[in-house]
Image (cartoon, rainbow, N blue to C red; front, top):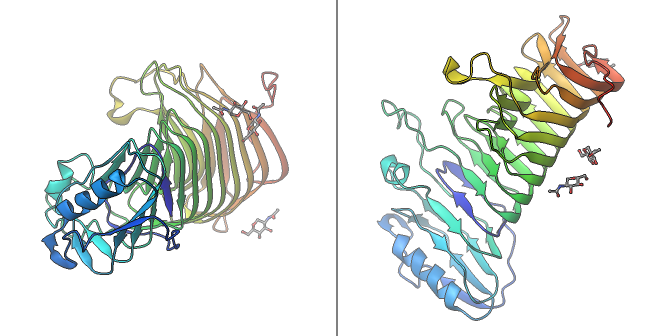
Length: 376
Ligand SMILES: *[C@@H]1O[C@H](CO)[C@@H](O)[C@H](O)[C@H]1NC(C)=O
Ligand SMILES: *[C@@H]1O[C@H](CO)[C@@H](O)[C@H](O)[C@H]1NC(C)=O
Ligand SMILES: *[C@@H]1O[C@H](CO)[C@@H](O)[C@H](O)[C@H]1NC(C)=O
């Protein structure tokens, strides 16, 4: 179930199943089929969906848009735009909205199913099929990008969602969160070609729990500090995560450039990794193609980051890497009960400009520098 308040975009979906939960059946009900949608997988039903949305927006009290079983071709991007007068709008899907087979139709729009300026929308059930098919994109090198984007939203809950796409499709983040406040994501299964969850600037109070990730690039806080004036990111808890064969586990990545951004008050807890390439990583030297940043230091202050009960196996020898900025070293990194192993060989930890403390069992050994600057 997704509760959407200001603006969520279902952009570029490949496969994506929403958790079924009955919505309260009171209020007006608008069946998309009664309004002209055809569940044959071929007839364009975008206009009928828009009519349903319009009717729901005009209804006085709570309302439900109902999508019965069947495949509904939504042949173009549909903008669900508010504000509206009445009560909450529920969208209950039993069937499967499907994207046009020509990916360029959505590729040239901002997203497939964006919600803008809405307050109190609930979406549940069904499968949203973005119709990425293996081989379909060959020769284009343009992928459908993020699955679910939470951008400039407040008070959003995403619960029981499964996202599936191929592990080799670039830029297909599962859930991307930016400039948002109070976002909870729970009980997710994500298989994708990029970050399972990516959280970036301007976000505070984000909570992620019960997340299964793989294939994919793991849980990523990235890529902060591209510009000088940038909003920070704070108060993020990620817990009970299983990562399987992902390229990263828990990653914080910032540009190697001056910036006023910050990343602070994070807690990563109860994480199990299996064959992950970079299990724990803070990389403050991101400078793709060595353009506009070589030799510069990241201005992003990374502080108060806790890793607790993190265990499992790494696919590479360096299982933990804190590569922080010279100008603004990481402070207040806390590690408690971390056990990451690399095959039967010794694993390594690397710290550069990283201050903090460790307690409990730490494997590999703790490389954090104790610092007076750590008032935490
Ligand atoms: C983040 O958490 C800190 C410490 O709990 C709190 O003081 C601060 O107000 C929070 N930030 C936001 C934006 O809620
Ligand atoms: C450090 O972060 C945690 C959340 O991860 C928060 O509860 C705590 O208040 C923060 N400490 C300070 C000093 O802000
Ligand atoms: C760390 O995990 C390995 C297996 O992955 C286990 O054999 C070892 O006992 C654990 N070490 C600690 C200190 O728990």
